Image (cartoon, rainbow, N blue to C red; front, side, top):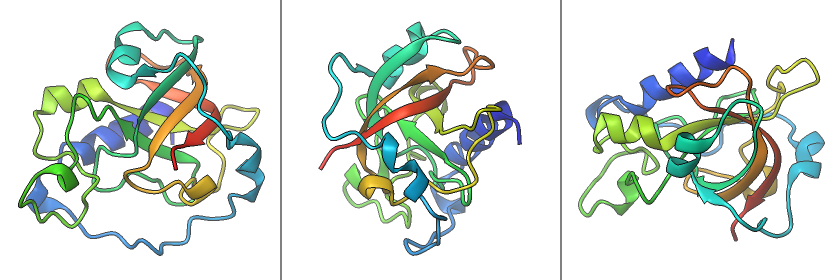
Length: 176
């Protein structure tokens, strides 16, 4: 699957309504993330920007440091691939923060404005030498899970554009 297709999939999932959400299992096997352990950072990098600001300023090829949460759709991790969706919690609100919301996926942002969602989420992936996402899940890496607050170091993928931002991660800090 091409990176732009992955982001389009993520955006489609993010824009789905609350009533259309499907429950996902917290125990879904995500593959062996042991080979990704070198990506886990022990401290947050300095000078991180928010995802909304990154989407405005990041250009393909730029090295970036940004912060956000694992939020954005009912399925934020791609099974069997080192791909996840992140969102800017200063611009969009996950269901767990909406009083009385009983959505089965508290990391979803389905109640927010579609344009705000589109401007505030990105797809993060870990790629091989050929630029393809690794065939292992990210969930569980360094304690990474839905709603985790992260700081990422990476490079804006060459095929990213204003509508679809894709980041090739080289470092991941999971806030305790």
